[in-house]
Image (cartoon, rainbow, N blue to C red):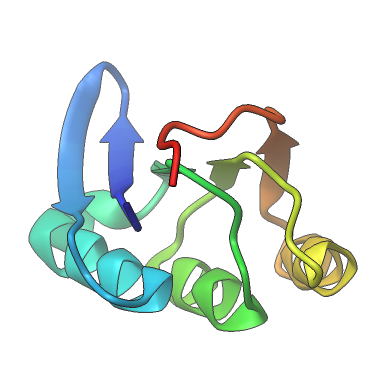
Length: 98
């Protein structure tokens, strides 16, 4: 779990996974993408639990976050995304079962 991919155009440009925190997976995906992170989509296998993930995405120039929603902090995460002018899609579908 805690899997994050960054996609730009039709290409995966960054992957972060297998970490004990989602924010670390976001950080790794951004590092792997380098300059290609700017303008990309961030896709998470589960909900975004804290605003620090959105803050990292904003600093990297990410324009869209796709996540499941369902965190107790959804309202704060949505507010942070709105403030950063990051579009957010909540799918309601998790991609792991634990």
